[in-house]
Length: 343
Image (tube, rainbow, N blue to C red; front, side):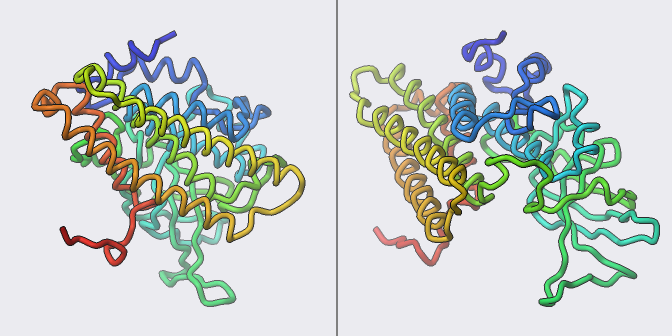
């Protein structure tokens, strides 16, 4: 077993998650927290999984982010036909990952297959994936297929890693070890069996009923809180004379609130009640506000740490860069129209 301390040491200054850490991830089954037990997964409840994601992000930003997004992609086991999911997840090292963007096309063929072409960006964990997930526009004879409302039809596909070309183009200041690369697919034929639709499930579980927006919001929030917790831990070591107690207590308070929301969501769904649009909006706005406040406070603390905190080889600098790279994720980012840039 690798302790948090050992994982931090392995990933300090690293541009890739080491083979040793990847082996540990597979041994512990971390990538399968959302995979049902019947497919060999851990079948975590929502609150239980969020606690794990927080702890992993608190250990290291890249470690937590890669696990969050790849375990999140493995969640799609629930959207696949049972025989296909059972086949894919019979392997201990199965790891999905990909892009939520619509980056290409899936040309419908006469033999119940689709010919995939395109390029997709920001596939976290790319070097460690066994399968890429992607969204593509469905076409026939080169023309988009539309639904009854005139909207272009989108479908998600699962492609074995060997049929994708990875483009190692991650140049960001933080999250350097996540392996968040682009990938391209060229004329790859995929059976319809290896495609899925986000809101169609073949399992019968409360987790299936959690709105994707809520699932995404809370899994990302615990990452920000975990990195913030690690950040303040290192800040105390640099400036022990400063009282950062309020920051620490705020992280603990908001983590507790996120976990309470997760519990309430599952309880409500367990009572066969829906999570209304208004409730989803309320959860999302809480996330937006929290990330804004947290970002300001991380920056405020950083400016108190002195020149040593700018050492590119230091833990605090890595956490700072990881946090603000992750905070660029579009999920909670306010539009420019909502900002007042005066000072």
